[in-house]
Amino acid sequence: MRTQLLTGLVCLLLVCASPVALGVGSGLPERGSAGGDSSIGVEYAIDREPNQTGHVRVTATIDRPRHVTGLSVRTPAEATVHRADGLQSNGDRWRLSGAARTARLTYTVPVGLSTAFGRRTADTHNWTLLARQEVSLRARWRWHVGPRPTWNESLALAPGQSGVAGRTAAYIGPHGTETKTVDGDRITLIVPAASELRPDRDAILDSISHAKRASTAGRDHDHIRVFVAPNELASGGYAPSNGEPDVIVNAGEPVRSPVNVWVHEYRHTRQTFEATPEMVWLEEGSADYHTAALTYAAGDIGQDRFRDRVTTERYETADLTRPDNWDGPGPQYHKGTRVVAAIDARLRQTTDGRRTFEAVLGRLMQQDDRVTLALFAETVSAVAGTDLDAFVRRAVTGDAPSVPMDALIDLSPRRSGSADTTERPMNAAPALERATAATSAGDRSGAGVGTARPVTDRHGEWTVLGTLGMLTVVLVSRQRRLERP
Image 1 (cartoon, rainbow, N blue to C red):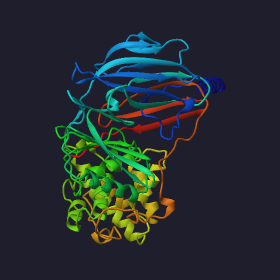
Image 2: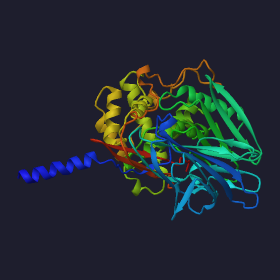
Image 3: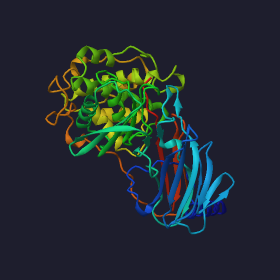
Image 4: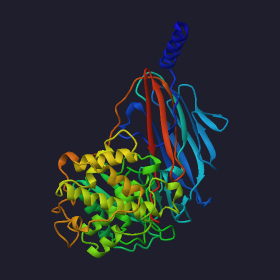
């Protein structure tokens, strides 16, 4: 017995003392990452290929921190490598040579991201609109004692190209821009010459500005970039990654609509909570509900249209925790909206208007854990100050709940005109409920191996698993492609 116990303790010590940690991660930077020496930086400079329509040329510049002792990358599918500086080929991967701190890889890659809702990006004779995941490298790295490295990607345009590069999207070609400053922050509309913009530019910027002022939960970026997609691409909107400041919206989308896509995609720029498969509906359901509520509060739709949207009977019997059983993506947009509306109304009633669903989102975004149904119900109850667990679970998994509209119809102190600086937020949650994006727990010392890859499927996810001394760290995130059905 003693021999078995001793053997077990030796094995445990060997595992805990191991200098290597295995990881699989996303190409997205870690939330709260400030870059610097702990970050593996990669910048993708985008250049058009006039003689090869449908492709772009990418020069990826990789900067490796000193404590990263090994780093290799793999190009996107269908990429053709033209030049490698400071990198050596190793089968289907490229490894940084020796002690090189900086390396460059030049390759061409096809552009044309399509989803179930249609084509979102394209490269044509006259213009290019792309998402970062189309050009991103997949990476693996090893590091010694020091801060755990993060993978920090950015986009840029090659010299001589005219356009705009954001963090997760870029446009090259003839265009115009319009910028509005909101409380010191900027919202920039990038309008391709090839697009026929349906709403007025000022109406779009006013609508997003109102949503920005009224929103309290999540990451409040100092610069939002709204890339207008030419009309020939899919209708609706698309966000390459939740919590990032870039969105794509088709030029034909209206503002005065309960499904105002300009506001819907803006709400996704604030979302930093991470959901389990049973709660993925919350990303779209909450964005769609607040889209209707914010557009109504701004006076851009009337009470009847707002009521019809949040009391919809579409997919009312769907179990939102079983996405594999859905007949298409509709349940998260329709029943999800109604469930969030019902919970928001219950919170307002229970707290005499002092707490709203925005407070629930704020708390979820401060959590390190992924959002499960149990955590969601627990958080709603905590915000309400009373046990709503059974109510929440029935609403999510059973028939759609009724929505007490009396609790929702007075969402704004004024019912006409566009947003301005005198307007109060529609959500009157106390200051302690106004949360910013969750940040990382800080750097940890250790040694290990990490990997990074862009996510290519709509419900893709990534995981980082590392053993740092006696501590095992598991971080899980989800990159979402956010769209309108």
